[in-house]
Image (cartoon, rainbow, N blue to C red):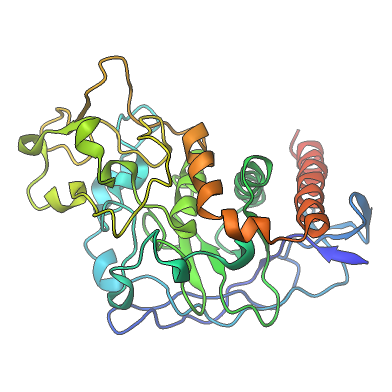
Length: 344
């Protein structure tokens, strides 16, 4: 039985986000810009050929999702801190997603979902499976591979699985790169949602892992209820008007799922996040700790995510679960070899 692995399709029509925001496009019909693979069993690849010198495609036509209901809130995007975002580079202490000008830096809010969070079971993904669609107009082949490798880290370290959108899915993410900033909604949204990775700055492994954790239901680590036991917020150094980005959430809204505060979480602000004067806005109370990192999931991120989706993962069919993980890993390795041969 053949299985679809991933789909990178054309851009579709724009959707209406909600009453205060415009929606974003969903994928289009299959064509030369699509990346599609058919697999038999775990790793036998068939119908594999190069299109336009780079993209792999089979005769199977990718499924076009409906337009995503939850796209960018354009009112929020107009407040985007464009100069700081545009001048960011890897040697800056701030994380690029902190400069996206949205709530807490990179959280896309819609009025109907302002209070959804980790403790709301309706905002998690059923069976720990996230359907996705990549807009190939917004990313080149190398960038698509970076996105796929972020999925791979989740498959290797957690019980969450990403798979291509299929007809009939009620929830999915569409990965786009044509809006400003790096951002996502928090948790699952009914009717599809946009996760934006502005190219090229946001298409970095740690950034993608960070935004996917938002989509899975995570807020930033320093918003945790118990954070004052671990860090000191230097309110006097915060840019006026951005103090709300350092608010804490009540235990009724978010949970640490029994996992201690994590200085090294990929979801933690940098020490100079939203600084008005170049001084630290957050200091760890542990003198030997550093704040955050850009490499990927920390051990505590992994533990917390697996606890969050424990019930869904325990109910998952073991064969399907392992099959889904293994064939995605196989195809990423295979496709990476194809890219290496073409670009060397």
